[in-house]
Each structure stands twice: as C-alpha cells, then as structure tokens.
Image (cartoon, rainbow, N blue to C red; front, top):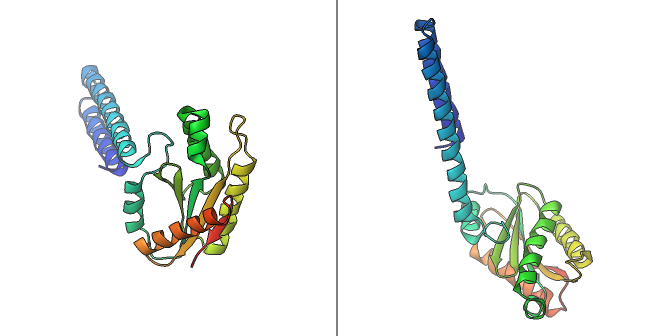
Length: 209
C-alpha cells in the first residue's frame, strides 16, 4: 500500500469521526473514544510505513555502504524511460593491498567514506550501486557521455586528494553512454572501459562507445 493510500485511509477515519461528533456532539465519551481510535490508527500506519521502508532497505541496499545493490539496479533499469543515460564504473586501485596492509576495518571505512564523497558530487536522483567488492556503478539519468566523463573526472580528483585517515587512495573509471534501454552489452563495454583504465596505469577515466 502506497503512502497516498494511507493518506486516504486517514481521511476516511476523520470523516467518520466528524460524523460521530455531528451526531453525538454532546456525548464526550464518544468523542474521546474517536480521538483514541484515530491516534491508534495513525501510530499503526506509521509503524507499517517504517516497516515497509526497512524491508525495502534490506532488499535493495548494501548493508555496509548504504549504496544500492545489483537487484535494485536491474529493477531500476527496467523502468527507465527511453532516453540518453550514462554509466560510470569505479574500482578502487590496489584495494586488496589496502586490506592486507591496514586491515579490513580500514577497508570498510574507505568503502563507506567513498560513497559519502560520491553522493556529494552527483544528483539525488542518480543511482549509486555497489557492484561487488570495491567496484561501484553510478547511473546518471539523462546525462550524455561528455558530461558523464566530466563527473567521473571530478570524482576521481576528489578521491585522489581526500585523506582517508592518513591513507591516500586512487580509483580507476570506465564510462559508457547508453541509448534507450541499458543492455548487458552496455555493461560489458563499461567493464572494458574500466579495464582499459587499469591497464593504462590506473587513476584515470576512459570511455568506450
């Protein structure tokens, strides 16, 4: 049940209570009972709404970084209207070495902090996905490849200059513009663009068409 349906239910209850008051206005007990029922209903609706949101988070969010997961990504792209969109794939350079040197707790901190940095540099309606391990994908809606490369470069520079509790890291990027629906071929080319950044020395942005 959507939030609009909850709102309509509340309206129905308010109309019901108003009818009781109009009919039994002088009977205080009826009014008191009505107000009590309204409060109970409101609390129940809020609990259901919060529980629904909690279930959605478990189903669609990565518990460590709070980025979306692959399941959400594939459901999201099915519903995208046909238009020009762009994908950015990000991979933290030498992340295994970071974990081995500083421990997984530091690695987890870097992953979480990375998402915070990215959220500041993209729009609220853009979708950040933890693709796996230290790999992330950003879905930029209604953004062409030229703008996507500029956004990727901005993120790259921010990561390179950021102090992760005394640790400096870099990341490699792949960019792919998509037309109409996003396909598995688009994702393969995106991965190849990222791989190109890795083979050319890391800490750079590459795009394939």
